[in-house]
Length: 567
Image (tube, rainbow, N blue to C red):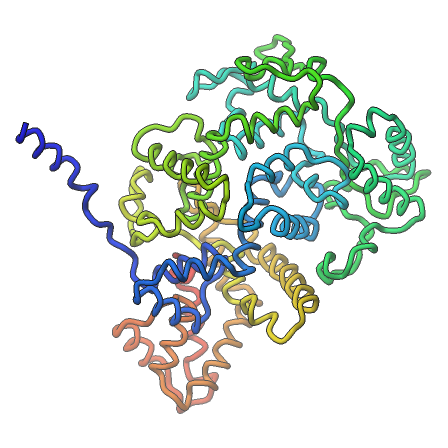
């Protein structure tokens, strides 16, 4: 017995070994990038480093999680995870920034339950301008696309794999499961209303009592408000405050160019001031919902009643209401695993389970870890802040990064994998932070300025980083594009010149050591090493003019080093 005990202890010994934690500089950079989507300022860096080295890392986490930037970042992460893919959205950047604000204000309170958010996503109705949750749908998606996207993002179940054949990895998911879930979305009335003729036809449809009842009193009233504005040849966006429009000029159309290209504007018809994506449900019982599909040259029909046969389905309930109750309330473990895994993907660059949208069957040590966080989420009444806090305080999150990528890419929990900053993170980090932008302004002026800056940053990201980096990929696609853009883009060259000029003026009477300490803290969130100081000291001469001093070349070199794009 004693011998067996010794063997067991030896087998478990690696799990008892303390993880090598990141140093204070690395952890400060990581926590700011993950929670606030930017690196810390030089002042924030030194303060954060002092807090971490003083053993009060948890208090720093708590402080950052109370900032507006954290809530904005989390709302943006939720939109990215649950909304249609960018290329399939019918509305543009400003509309989705409004959606982020709506999520922040309505679903991210201290005691929020994410199931309420998921329920409102699945049951959204009305016009997009009046009910922002409608933006979680797109006119470009049919029932099959909606099934694949929402099953993966909400349940962590890759139903798309069963669209054309029984699932190869999860044999208990078959083709009929996919199409019977898709049948729930066949009850949707989803369309873009873009012309006066379409508006007139739509108004007649709203006159149907059953149809109006499906829409609900509040959404009906808001939809009729939009109709009245259009009939009076007024733009609904004119009724929004400058704050809601983010300080941008009112445009004629609220739709993306791609969505407008889908609209058939007849020469004899009049286009609306603000065409809208509208969503409701046809007045149908769930048993009458069915969807036809083709498989291997044969035609089949699936009905909504086939889905989850072990549960009784209400014959009188609205289809998406029934689906929502099952997805977010009746089977909370599925949803909890999915949320826990995409939060892990956010903070680690990979989920416990990969691909991160497939948590249907969890096994092994990583599966056990995922279930542990899913249970934490459930015990905290599905509060996402509790899950975020638990993760960033965990030993796993605080591990030191590994400069080498494992061949198989699966052993990343032994030492953290390096991640690449996104275009958004780089632009956010090089611009002034939220508190500096809003300093000295009242609340309304501050919000207007923040929104204008957000539009400016997004434009910059779109132009400079046409290929985004996705850390869920096996290889870092876009890294070379990002590096070349940083090296050659005129905006970044101007930024580097401005930073160099200011640094030259500020430190020429102070010293090269202080200059390098400032630049390394600003761009790398750390102090320079002795060899680095020696290297750059040989290149910098404060006795010469700015152009000949070597300060610009130093700044440019630091900005274009891979380290600036890593954490």
